[in-house]
Amino acid sequence: MSGAARTGVFITVEGGEGAGKSTQIARLAEHLRRGDREVVITREPGGSPRAEQIRTALLAGVAKDHGPFAEALLFSAARLDHLDTLIRPALARGAVVLCDRFADSTRAYQGAAGGIDPQEVAALERVVVGPTRPDLTLILDLPPETGLARARQRAEGQGPDRFEAETLSFHQRLREAFRSIAAGEPERCVLIDAAAEPDAVTAAVRAAVEGRLPQLRRGGQGHAA
Ligand code: T5A
Image (cartoon, rainbow, N blue to C red; front, side, top):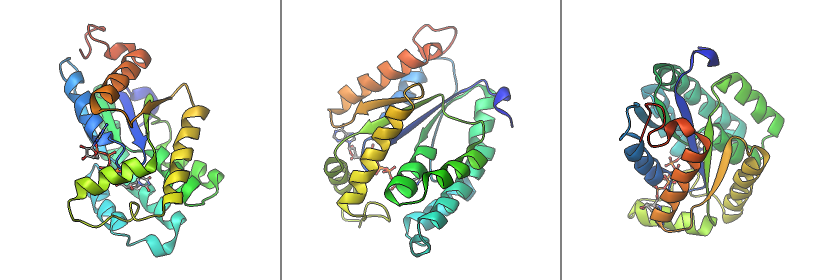
């Protein structure tokens, strides 16, 4: 499907481990659902049955020994199916799609932190994502120590997954990568202080959405309140 067929709004939320993406997506969806637009929550890797199968393998570390490029290919395979079966049809129906991680995670995790050449990551992104680029990307920024502590607390005795188990310096490179994506594409991205209290983060998220996407403002032309 070409970008021209799209009437929906595509918002992605990015950041390091335990940044609060799921929490904030649920709150934003609740707010937007007071309007008359369909709101779809989804995530990567995953979001469609076939992509969820790939997620299970990736987070279990099945592809780790094959290296970051092989992992990027698997994230991309999951993304292809997710785009074809869920994201593009939802955007064509006019829905607001809220996606927990997307292509910026490949740039940050497999590219900047994993060491793949940025031109190779960009080439993959061109082929896989094509015209279906986010209208807005919220990058939740916080020190990795804080995010990892939150993720550990929530895990309640379960061990870390494939990426949570990486070194602190890996997570510091990730943070820098996300900050540099935000700085490099200010028309698409908004950097949000995610170390703040949840309500303060929610207020910043809402201000960013309403500032960048006036069609989603309360009372905005038949759209979400
Ligand atoms: N990945 C993904 C790649 O390497 N390449 C890719 O291309 C893609 C798409 C996905 C993994 O895959 C990697 C990145 C990831 O490592 P995942 O389980 O989906 O794995 O991991 P995350 O996306 O990191 O999800 P998390 O659930 O760990 O983090 P969230 O969603 O950012 O955080 P959330 O909302 O669940 O909150 C975590 C905890 O903190 C609390 C919450 O209540 C919860 O307990 N919390 C706060 N506490 C204090 N203050 C706040 N402001 C808080 N906000 C939330």
